[in-house]
Every structure is written in structure tokens, then in C-alpha cells.
View 1 (cartoon, one colour):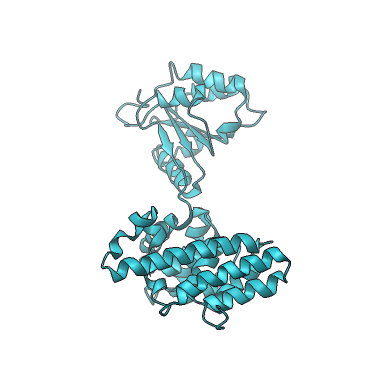
View 2: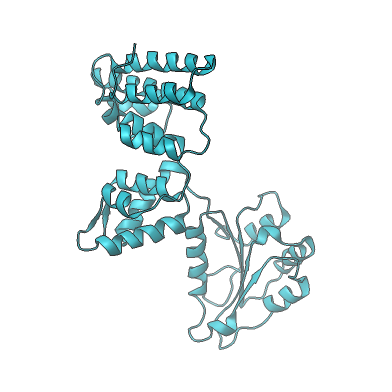
Length: 327
């Protein structure tokens, strides 16, 4: 079911997912197919609120484009469409205007809904998945953003930007552009550039703190701990213990010449253990084992009513090698 002779476009698309950058790019591509100079006449953008009447939307969908080419009707927040309007769209898609493209934009829409099924039936590419990547899976995405600005960006710098800005791809791209403009002559965005020029707006995630402790960066670990909102020290101790066991496994595998088996052994994706081998090398003989003992002791102290901050900060300093209080 094509829209417009030779356009190669379908009559309808569903852009679904919370990756703002992907969603915006998909919408921009469709807008770019409108006849130049006639965009104001052939683009109708609407919000799926209670004021969007079925008859009004259908009238727009059945309007012929001005100056030839295509007409684009774009409806955002389509997950909030009232049932009468949604049903009207479903009926419309049975015999759509061949010169009009309908683009529904939604943060989420269940595959089981009649509307999703109706759009999916239009063609194999009708549903444009904009599901976001999460956590460290965004690191290569950030690096590609830097490459698009003709800049190099190491994994550590990308991770730091992710930690400070959060997972919004729109915000990440904006900050990469800012850093690129600032550092254009250098051709590279470094870890220190991110720390010097990007303010923290995102809540500190536990893995950022774990990474700092794993790297034995005491000052950095303290900074991140201080920025966490109402952290559970007992939960953090449990996470630290798990991380230290992973580092011990990394060291053991490396000693046996089997370092490449780390991700498989831990049952984790490769990106999730990328730093483990390097971190494990920062601990001397027996230090990882003593860190595990220190975690167990700290957990007992926390449960017995000892001063929470004193016990937990003592554990961090011990693991980072600032103090020797590891039993």
C-alpha cells in the first residue's frame, strides 16, 4: 500500500519508542519527502488529545496535496488517541488516500492493540522501532555522535557523559555538539573535557559508583557517593561484593590464559565486563580476597546498628587502597 506514485512510501507509519533522537530522525525523513516550497500546505501536525475529533482528522487525511507530491499528517502522542479517533484511523487504513502519508508517533503502543495491528498490516516497514538503548549500551552510540562531529571520543569519556547527562539521546547529542564546538581544533573529546565542561544533571547510577571503586579512584567514588539520592548502604555493599567477585574471576581467568571467556563465564554481555580485566590488575596479591572479607564485616556492622557512614566510607577507603583496614 504505497503513498504517491513512485514515492516508495507506505500509507502509514508508526514511530514507536522513547529514543527521542531516533524518533525525531524518522519524522524528519518523512518531512523531507514533501515537495519543496509546499511544506506549509502539505504538512499537518497534530497532538492526540481529547480535542482531536475523528471527522477533523479524517478530513485532513483525505485532503489532496497542494502542488502535487505528498501530504503528511503527523500525529504525536498517539498512545493517547481516544477510542473513536483510533477506530476511525483503523477504518481509514482499509482504503487510505494514496497521496497522503499518516505518521503516528507514540512513546509506547502495545502490539496487541487494534491500532498497532492495523498500521503493521500496511507493510513490513510500517512500524519504526525507536526503543532506546540502556546503560552502557549507549556508549558506542555516543561515540558515533562524536564521529558525526568529526571528533574522537574514548569509551571512558562517553561513559562519563552518560553518567552526567543521563540516557536521553537528544540531550547526549546536544552535549556532544557543545563539546565538539569547544574542542574542534583538538579533534578529540577526552574524559577530562567531559568532567570540566559538562554539569551533572542525571542521578548517579549504582554502576557509576561501582566502576569508580573498581578503578580504585577514591576521590571519584566519594564524589559519586555524595551525589547519590538516599542510597541504601546495605544494597551498595551487596553490589560491591558482587563486583569484587567478578574481578576475582577476571584475574583467575587471566592467569589461566582464558581472559576472553570472562563474559561467557559471568553470563554477561561483553560490553558489561569491558573494564573488568583492567580493574582487576589494580589490586595486588590477596587484595580482592581481603576486600570480600571487608564487605562481609561492613555488612554485619551496618546490620548491628553501627554508624552507617563511618562503616561504609571505611569500606570504600579500604577497597580503594587508601586505608589498610581490610582485616
